[in-house]
Length: 280
Image (cartoon, rainbow, N blue to C red; front, side):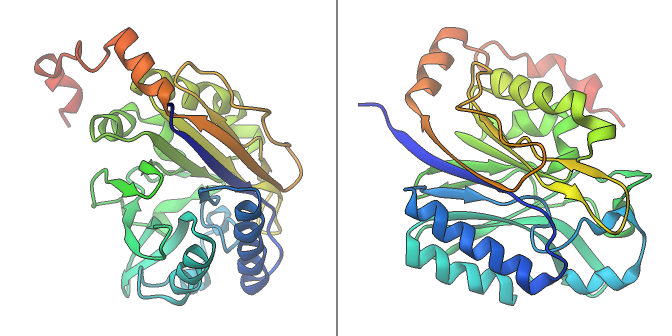
């Protein structure tokens, strides 16, 4: 019998303060679990505004230790209570002045499995991320969760195929890409890059984007969150481009073996010929 995972993504708008934003996401966990979801991923920097629209050191206060911080602990309790795997994209403080754009992964029993730190950090108008984050230094982990092997790639990372491939080679079955991406800048890529990555690496991708225009700038976050399968087919409908939405879909893991046996992309790789693309 094929293994089916019921997976969820949550896109929402900035509420105006950190605590109410956390509470909205706590409710999303309950709602997802009530619909039978086994794994849920939030949007990039989920409990705050997308503060990278400006360069203001006041937002350093949004960072906290992972996993010792209060937010991870709160969601560990919820994960255990509802038996759901959680991916929490957060602002991490490793130590004062050493900050990362990070996703913490919590298993369905509430245990902390580890973190992914965003590798590729943009610095363009409206996305001043080098002011806030160091480039990730923790590799391309794949987390062995109750529902299967999951990976994380964060927002701007998606423009770089190398990390997608590293996650596939490490055995990822689903890769989540939590994002904060703007209508005017990248919408023409949103429904192109992640489906292409799903095909090239033969896994499912969950692409999450926030919605709305926030008070810090004019970035119009366009939602349209979705799951895509390794044949580049959307699993159900793509979410709204304006409204908060919880996306819950059934992912048939049997497709992975079927498609990998059909195409044999991993067999036919030529890493011996790729050295020039890794040269600085």
